[in-house]
Image 1 (tube, helix red, strand yellow):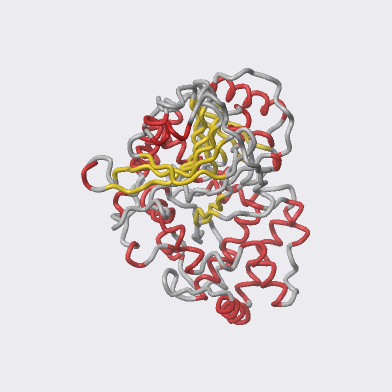
Image 2 (image 1 turned 120 degrees about the horizontal axis):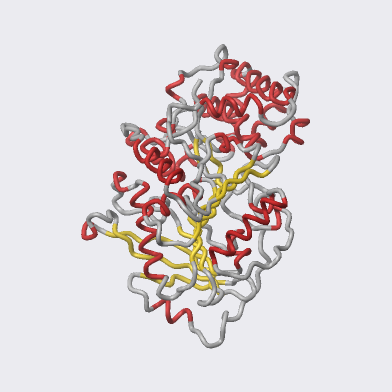
Length: 462
């Protein structure tokens, strides 16, 4: 399965933008930014009222252990409110969004925000790229250097946040540089501490929701799609040709991409849809055209094409080498599947030149142990119906919290928690940020514009 970024309709709510005046008349933030060594102001654009919005880049060592061995430009954006407000470090985990947005913590603390593109996601990729320099410590050190230079401008409290792989990234930064920020809010952050131990995912899919008939219907429609391979794959190939998609650079052919997509469907259904959508799962007697359309609407036929996979090579590389991936038991598909279990791994979604990498389990074991025993001021938010909730981070008891939003999927946030848990989480966040503990406005989950709706997808093993 893969962690991919997909802007899903309904999960991202746009801000109402307008031309914004300077955040305060007595401070020229642009001049101060230009004085930071290594920081380039690429542009200033429209912003929400009361903010200024900048696209920036920062010169980073390719290898922080050998700073003289080359540099690359790391892209980030800044939403500036005032230097006397808290700063929220949004770790994207992927590419950086180029339009202004406010994450949920930024809204709750009424603060500034920087959002950082993860190294090796283009254009924040060294040239030439030595993929050995893509690991969690190097990425955490990128964020550490940014915090160091920007704290000279923003000296108040700092909070880091991210969702999905971005949430994982905020945890890794906290582990290696625990004094950089004053608190962490990690949303739906997977914790695959033992890559080969995935029974938690099997238990999740055996019990998710409250309708066994829905779970059975999803299994049945997967089986039916693979059973109709001879009809669906030619249709898929024609669709790909009409839409400019190819398969030769990564997976190799449409049949492999077809099976990957079908296998993903149950995971993606629970990750991004709700139980209410169970009524739309088609019967196995529908036409092949209807079957093709439903799978495209649910799992996206474009994802496992070259165009879909290539932007996420950095993610797959990290999954294959350090982060791990989920493997599920799918005995119900064995009689109609074409490929062995070994095919369904993060390595399969890498270009052939990168597939020789080996998985190192030590980093995730270290992270998990640190979070359980030494972490502090950390808030983890999961969704009850999100597959990634099956393997969670469990923080220590040092002013840290773990909550799950009832019925929520991979878009879970503080607003979706029960009222009591939402109040505790909001109060903790504001306390860490040193802002008044005012009564929070009750907001629906979709009132927050959160761009970190990355799809966490890996091929699942049988």
